Image 1 (tube, rainbow, N blue to C red):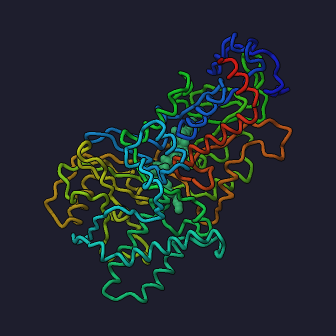
Image 2 (image 1 turned 90 degrees about the horizontal axis):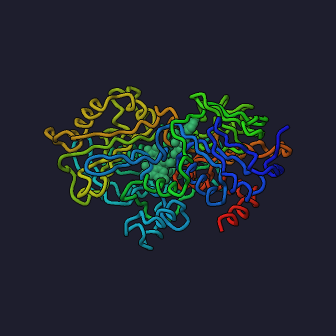
Image 3 (image 1 turned 45 degrees about the vertical axis):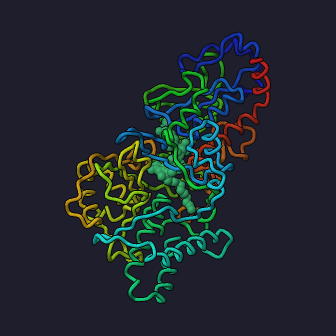
Length: 534
Ligand code: 6YU
């Protein structure tokens, strides 16, 4: 028979160290002070959701918490790397909506990780719904620089359409409608009234805007993104900001209070067996057994699964045994999880004007009304949407970070650095109209799609999916229908949070949410352990 954590009145003294299970337990004195055996909690994945959950549980008095992480590092899709004369981000880059309601902003401010501008109250109050607001340099593929006034009107139209798209959450659309189709209709109708001399540039500009939108959503095409639920993602106020010492410094600060050995690296989980009665070396019985790829296994009372949706898409049928319920399998299938990659380039000297923050390429003759070429080898670079001038040049050097989404991005992952560098040299020579432009001196690019434990960049509401799928993915197991069984598998991660999916703050909040679920389940732990500490 399976024993329930709450009813286990044996002192922890009797719970021998779980050496064979690689789970350390508190010492005898602590156990005696504590009373009933404390639950063993395993967290799968050491991204910000997993680290955040572990830290909250630790603070809440839980002492048997371990994180099993497949790779050799913590941070997951938050990854800061040395490049040029400083550091750059391979994954998450900005705090989206840095204001008091943003959990990442709150922590980053507390840890003193932000620059003075990010802390300005006026910046925290800014509401920036869509297009990058900062100064842009736009170049055409024939090497002409576009003046902002030339695209001012079409940009205003585009922003109004995107605002309209966000309002369909209140109704008036079909679940099969896509943002792409909605925008196409707007473009077709609006273009009838455009002066002929503006049509080509407007169309080419809009194609670029759609490419950028694909990056924001990590979708191959906006035709894949649901219109009805587009506005469910909640935009927080605040002018997006970055971490001067790298985003990973946030993860390092969050994990600092965790006891040594809490995070076990290079420990990829193969399968999770639940609803069982697994006997530990300590004569205790646990409902969950986690089997790792290297043959190790761990027993637990509760497991918080934080693996990316991209991983779950590959393993939805067999990652858990008994398998996930149909509502979760359907949610994993329905939700979108696509690729947004970065190509980071260092130049000896900038070809852009000082104060430029973004460079936007505009391909002559391109249009949002025609299908992009399927010849990826020749045309993948056409999907590059925008280049951010990475700050601060004085400390870092002259670095651009380009963004590319979708199948073209996945194709880029298959190329060598040399091939990409050569293509990018041709590319910038074309856009600057300077055939002698020196090639970039170094390159770093992300490969999130081929990453075996991520399988892409982040989630989106695909056509046919809805916020209910995100809620279903967040539901713990067993479901309410099996109320007689103990709570065992909890789910966190960016794809489990309806309003803030795809973001670091969403991921962190989801980890806190599941930690809180366990804290609420064991009110005695906080009370006992804080007393023990006195
Ligand atoms: C943000 C930003 N941002 C750019 C790029 C990427 C992402 N995001 P993790 O994957 O971190 O952790 C899971 C761990 O599990 C991981 O370590 C695995 O190795 C491990 N694991 C997997 N399988 C396992 C197994 N079997 N056993 C053991 N371990 C296993 N977010 O806030 N600002 O600027 C960007 C960006 C290129 C790839 C981003 C950004 C997304 C975040 O990085 C991401 O959500 C979180 O880090 C995820 O944390 P986690 O813990 O859940 O998983 C309208 C509307 C549109 C909505 N979209 C708005 C835009 C939002 C996205 N912004 C993107 C922009 C950039 C540049």
